Image (tube, rainbow, N blue to C red; front, side, top):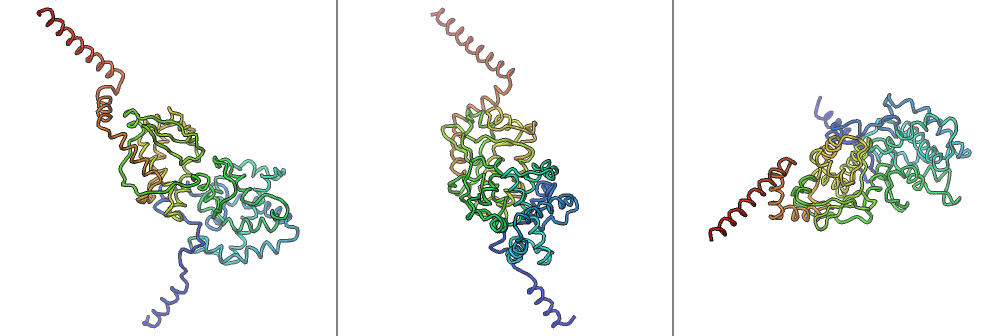
Length: 406
């Protein structure tokens, strides 16, 4: 190969290479070093949405269902099929830029995938919102829980803006006093909306919606933190620290005051790891300066080290463990932060400092050491009390003997 050919080949590479990340990019393959820790947490189990998992053979059984819903949505459109196609086709370049990877689909293939999947979602949400079930929905109804979780996975998304466009084209809420598509989405995922948020925010997709449900509104400032460890839950309890349930509906709303750490009630269930991992992956890829979920996971990883620490949180009513095994909960929180980048700022920086001041008080440390060395079991506590009683009685006897001599 002569040099001219080399230059031509390199110029072709430059021409064919697009910028990997654009302002529209919001849907990502989870980075390998994060994904390999638990690939199942990022992989849809029953239904593919969008192009990233479209060719997964395990998910083909739901294609017939998606097409049936697509057909029903087209019938709502009243001869607007061409408009639906045009809407997606006109947005094809922007849709392509929403994905972090180069999609191996030509424009027509991408339009077809996005159109069918997006219309399936809109039709599903309409049926749930208006309770419009038919006998053809038996398979869907049986799998609703699994579908809902699959729709929250970062790799299994279509951009929210195209869902709104298609919905408004067929059911224009501004003209017919109908709910917005964001309202339908909040209704569909209402189980995760503990704060009862109103539709007054902007989202990229459903993983972003899930994260928004868990954010504190307004969000506290993230401040620099010097990365000192806080005590584990069991160590904090030994130092006469207390735990209480914070009645806030925001999972991230932890508060510390006068030796008491208040944590909102948390249910740990089978889907907890999946939901956390996808919110963390979204922050890792998209919200690098606003890692509020990562801040929470970072704190909980310090607070929970072993099953003993989970026992403390369960005993105080903070955790409800649907997994049954407290050791499994400890392993869950210990593994969530693996592969996740943490920065020098945290929403809990003041809380970390206050807990350490409380825990490292010299008198409190002496109490903790005494309790750990001499009262860590019931028998050792009894023996320690007996020894103290013997010493006390010996002193009393000595004093009495001296008084008798005098």
